Length: 430
Image (cartoon, rainbow, N blue to C red; front, side, top):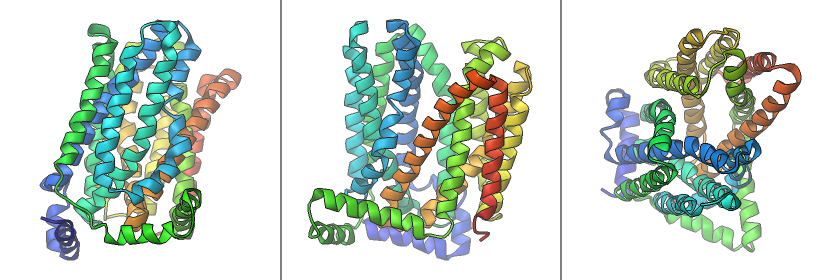
């Protein structure tokens, strides 16, 4: 089946309420072969990434004994997202998205394998370079995937079902990826983790290569040729960025939604930065307790995926986002003022459902308000915003935690999430 035929099928489903209702469930979306392949690829590559996310800081700390060096290994994966995100989106919109995903998976596998060269403390710079390269290539993969999914499932009810499934996969990865990474690092060593991560990227590339959908590139090529006539590469890049940012500024509700998301991700990052100190100083617990909390958080995200499908289409985006962020603020405030591990384990499971509802609703709203030719730029800008807010929140949380105390700073972060819920009241009601 060619690309136009696939698109027509999705459009027909959106136009017929009976067909749309039948196909809009999360399990119904899995009947779509191409989407099933891309989701499986996401599961495999993300598990590999989480294994390395846990193992790399431990490896650097064991190699150097330096907390600063360990922190730099985490920053190496964040900075490229802030610097390259919007620029990567320009190329995603000009390239074939399927081939972009395949190429970036292969390149990420190569970047990860560079970690096998590290033997001594003096070679720790290779770790930073490899992690930065992996993240840099990933800035093309994420927007390409976000832009390709509407072509596979359409923009109707199946789109929110697909996004809910994506969050379900994310919850599953949170549930098993972190603890599994720690176990593999302890039992099999860092080289085994690196090898598995590289293999997961190659497996993802293979699955994406099996996708039958072929986009019609006529309109995109025509647009690219028209842009090419306006000047050199720098001017072309500037023009494409301007068109993407112009769409964000002109589309009702999108600027406010980006602002709401920025406030939320900043508050969430403050909490994340202080989670380990909170466990160590307030709960007097260690790494094992952190694994348990991440596991219960994953359970919450798994529960939240079907919950997000229940509210999709029944409530407005504004109502869903305000309620979700308000609930999150309340759960955060209660969690970090409950100095008992058993209570926090239960409360961590309650974080997942409202967080999933917010993330799915925001992703779906942005996709539906963005034409296909701009999906890469808009998606990459949103991801860059998340990364920037996360970086700011992590730094602010670390500094404020030392100055005014851990719990006080975490309470302030919960208030910030409540502010994001209040700001969401200004979103369009429909």
